[in-house]
Length: 412
Image 1 (cartoon, helix red, strand yellow):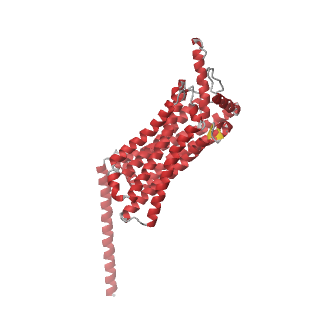
Image 2 (tube, one colour):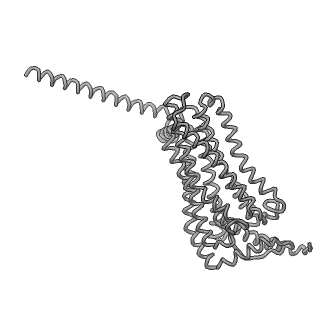
Image 3 (cartoon, rainbow, N blue to C red):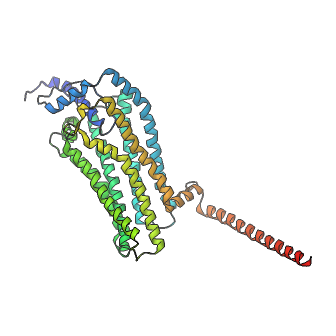
């Protein structure tokens, strides 16, 4: 390798950064869904990756200045709208979490897993919102230079975004196992699914996926976090990484489908003899709630995962053959589906879970704790007592009128 003079090192660094931002653009169009930028440049590094260079040249061939202007104007309208939806989704999920304080009874394992899943939805909205600001709003709409470590920011956000997706699917799998044991093994449920076991499982489901992707991005030689200024991450554009992510999505989905089909068949045949009718009705209602959340998860994430698996350098649909405007519009649709999914889940919690519904009612009655529960309970008790006395008095009057009527009829 030729040794360049020290005076040219700053120039080399800037050119490598510009070239890396070009690579980031083509990747984040598909993964983070909204690109950073696409400045045409070429690295002056002595060793050149022929695959990456040909990919960059082919990508630039389909990009015109007018396309960049149209994309900037599109982002100027779309990104703020998506940010507003992300903020609303984050606020709604946080309200669900804050309402736990007003839950009257101890938290069941199902409720603990559902609340942790609400945290995962809030986390997904937060990461997508930060990604929209860092990858789209600031660099493209306002032309802000994100500095030499912009690629590292993208990698960290991508690790947290993909980790958040796996966290959510693991929570849904844990809920499926919880329902499976509760319906098919009710006598073993209390001993198997304890609060300590659930807390340990929740901690693992949060730590392992994010740590896995951060480690993955750090262990590839001369790639990801191990490259200068995170300038190279070719592994993201090839099948092995795409297959890894899709496996983490589809395998839990298949396992959940098998368990829910088995539960449905067992309930349909009516072979459950160890549960009372009320217990079985409660279990089935919880299963339906989880299936609704699972449906929003599949609808929200499936388009992103399918597009992710099918489009890469050596995938069935090479990304070099996809025009920029197609990538942009597909990216907007994918991000919108994920955000809408996180927005709908709190509505399902409120509509289907009586604990959350009652806790939210108590929270609003006490004005988030501004009024003590004793005052509210006294007011509710006073209204209930007044209603009871009114009802008793009305009943007495009705009876007296009925008696008087019968007496008059008897006299006549």
